[in-house]
Image (cartoon, rainbow, N blue to C red):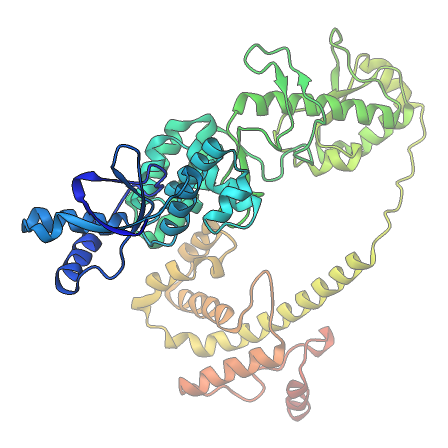
Length: 514
């Protein structure tokens, strides 16, 4: 055993070589280096019983020799030095894995294929196979192997380097149930510039879920683990309704947050909403001591969420009349009725009666129940206090702006009024319609004042969500006037002291004025 010159015709590749692609540019560069400087290190291999030599690694060097022989036939390159070693099949496979995993052009698909072959051929565990490729955790190995379950078209895009591995993994759940759609989205990602591929992924998945399914970001059932056991639906296409977690039709629509997902089995989602509403009706009925409507019963509506009838609904519930029925309600797949929640503790039930006339008599003879006083939490009190302070500041700042507007409005040329209106429309009115109504009714001078008032609101940071202090707003407006060479008269920022809206500087001005 040792180094031997072996004819290129007798050299074979390692059958466990996981790398399927060799960059021709790098092969050409290596060939030129060999031609100028010679082979620096002979590759290792083993001799087979039939006399042929099987490389353990060094396939790029073999490709370079064959290129030299093809481009410039020379007896020097008809043979290549090979270090002959007596290796077993497993040693050959392990050496191939270790050596090739260090190359830059070694793809995730190459790695996954190489690990799977080691597992199948030698009975290695996933973690044992992974360590040969530099992977140290079970999760990392599983992620790589899962790529082999993707459609062939997607694997080819990963192999070509146009579909990033992490995006391919994010498409796995969709590929399980709609391979055609997953391949189409993968092709779109592969065709996009590398710096926008993440955005393309999110947009494509979001569009697919909106067209084909329902969002699972806050479904009616509070936990994606509901129901604990599948529920028989009686539907031929969806015989059982499972929990959403672990369901193959539950696909992710975000790269940053795995919890943002969508259900692409729309029929199952719809059936589940009805099952949830029935479960809620039974829960509410048990809690309130009122029967759930039977399958053979018909009930007239007593309360369906109208806030004007909330007191009437509470009076009816207080009677505990035998005609009352809790009725499942799926008017909105995602709920959202605060009135229903306020009355029942659930937005998936309404109140009905199988005998409205008898119920009315019972309600008329029952004293009106006292409205329970809702206890206000400390956090709620703090929130109310902050809102009150913000509203007070906003009122003061609006007063300052109102004082400054007539003085600063001439700064805006009438020719710019319409242009600036389009930019400041939502500062002029709470809606487009309100703003346009104000604008159409205003004179040229009034339009200038509307524009300046809107500009000052934006300039000092006055909005529905926040308000600056009066001192800060006064200083900003004053500084703006000085830069525009507009002289504001003394006392322009004096506000109504009776309303408690004066500032420290304003009170001084007010005294001088008096």
